[in-house]
Length: 579
Image 1 (spheres, rainbow, N blue to C red):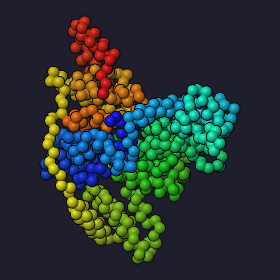
Image 2 (spheres, one colour):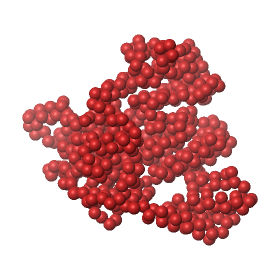
Image 3 (tube, rainbow, N blue to C red):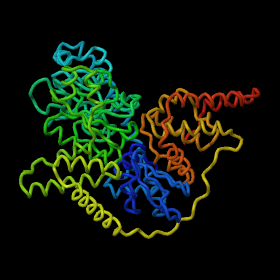
Image 4 (cartoon, rainbow, N blue to C red):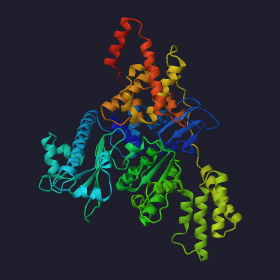
């Protein structure tokens, strides 16, 4: 049975690694990750780590590793198709057959082409069309011409079928336009444009492909913003606006804004490390995605009531994936766009530096809706604050917030600390009552395939550094595809993995660790997962990767000693190995 990479990625997103693992073992949070006693070999202290950001696991004791499908395979002694079926049933997904998967892949390719042509059409209509309202709106928002070009902003004409007619003339079918959600069908069976009379914001993935659109009206009609519905290439709960630019920022923090215009204004002011969700509250998938690009999030939502509610939800999401967050406090403006227009980019930079932490934000909101002048209000306030303080894992950090809270509300510090400790004891007691699932010891698989002994340590490290970089930043595969071919790697295993990345670039597919699980042994999956796991806390730069590429290319040139060697090398480059 063959599954499309898109389906496997959808399956992994629907079955978070930490959630599935928690059904089998007792997970303990350690920073951004979880640890547990490895269920695949006997041990007394945890050596198995769950990585929510890469949706993978690795045991530093026995070398077992992989993704959620590997975990289910090993836990329940299943073959790959059986494990996929188990997870699909858990998540409510339907497993496609081979023919359906092939048709799905072809449709994705056509939708990418439709989106690319649609984005170009909207861009041309913005400046070259007869209706200049879209351009006038963007100019009124003080967007520079280079910013409009950078984001590929456009305008959807108000007529019913201007885009539809254009795409049909380009050779796309009505069914393809409907699948891409750029057109709808009326009750009479006629096609009409999905977006009309709106300023258009192309949504671009990290590889530079247009996957969907957001559109804003120019009057008071509703909805104010309209996004592409779910398609085979787009899911608004799994993507982020402007991540294609933000991923290349050198900053270790990411700014999360509330909408398209806020993001564009912040970017135009000189801060490329900014993203926004796509009309929804931030999802677990989006939070996990951001852990791949930032060590901290600054939440820059609107200062109104809905914005503050959304801020609280975002804090919770980032806490779940172990990503620290700070909150931007704006005075004199309701959102970042207005703040930058009024005070300038330097004042905004200072505002970012002074952003408060999420704990203080949550503590300050504990009193909302309560009459703290009454005893009942004070009791409820104390319960809320205790709940927040008990979630702080670092005892020293918790002590600081305990003192601050006690002073602010004129509460006995000892009483507050006693309540927090009581809350923690109750929580620990509940955790200890969870029964560990009894499992049979699995036979440890053979050691993972090692690189050939003739390869130098320097070359091995170079190969593993490149793979680690790709495993954590798969969107860089397109850049690397212009630098290397799979035969530059000496290890057949590494050749297979790199070729999979190249195939994803060629087919415009999302890299999926699960796709490798179809062809790699458990030991090989453990090897690949280990490469990523052992470099989790090491930031690999593109410059370091370039040095590693140089090492591999130098090795290939040095290995050519005869005409036959040269001919062999040329043939390899013409026919690279495939998974």
